[in-house]
Image 1 (cartoon, rainbow, N blue to C red):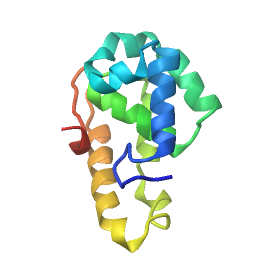
Image 2 (cartoon, one colour; image 1 turned 180 degrees about the vertical axis):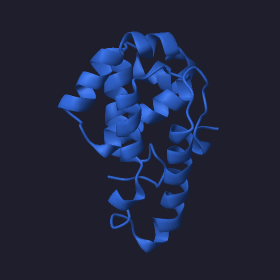
Image 3 (spheres, helix red, strand yellow; image 1 turned 90 degrees about the vertical axis):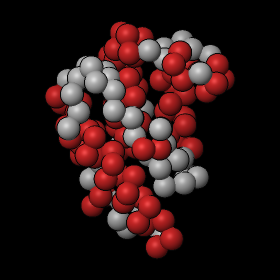
Image 4 (tube, rainbow, N blue to C red; image 1 turned 120 degrees about the vertical axis):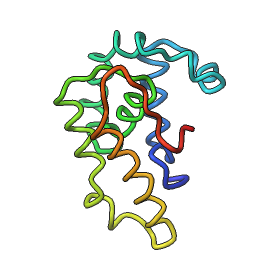
Length: 134
């Protein structure tokens, strides 16, 4: 269920975030929610192979790649170009335009455009958080 039109605004996004933070990176999820700085660039990068296995095997979807993309932007993670291309593909409005009610259409376009622009111009090692994370 979608809670709002942000990149992380739904139950599936939260579930994927939990699996990455808790199951793979070994952090207590409640502690992480209180202090997002517990998830570091090094911790994420050291577990990138495991994270991508989860994304590909259980959640090989646009939503899963959007979640990974958010972490990339937040932490300045070094990712392979193939992963970056999957994230860019996941941010294509054409796949979402029929999913949103008129009430949320423009708002979702706004968040997706912010996400896509930041992923397209992303430079490894340089965090560039989404508007929703500021």
